[in-house]
Image (cartoon, rainbow, N blue to C red):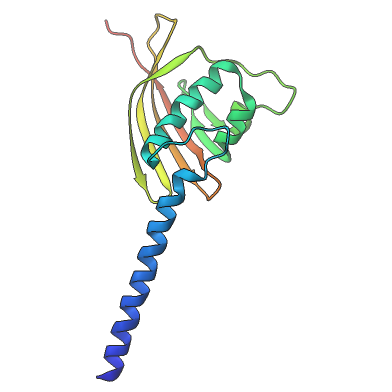
Length: 160
């Protein structure tokens, strides 16, 4: 009987330790972002702000911001169905990179899963009559801040 009580007490203590570690890591997730990337009061807002940071960096050809924001092991699908990696988005130093037209997030929502965030939404181009695109982005916080690890972009079809 004494052994069962000790075993039960150990399980309770281990459970409390695990819960505190999870809470602590979730609390730190939004605070470790690189200095040049925005920080917000809560983690979901911080991740949603990263979407606009990404769009701004794409339209300005801001490779240093994109380099910090996009993980080295990034993989994605472009609007045309092509498979992308980080070097497709952030070419090596000295190489030209195409700029995306200025765009803004039209709608988006984020879901957190520990130190992984999934953001889905749509983007509208600011100065073009063409429709924007829909996106699904996956961000991961590996302790150094949020980075985009995966993306799927799909063109929005014009209404007929």
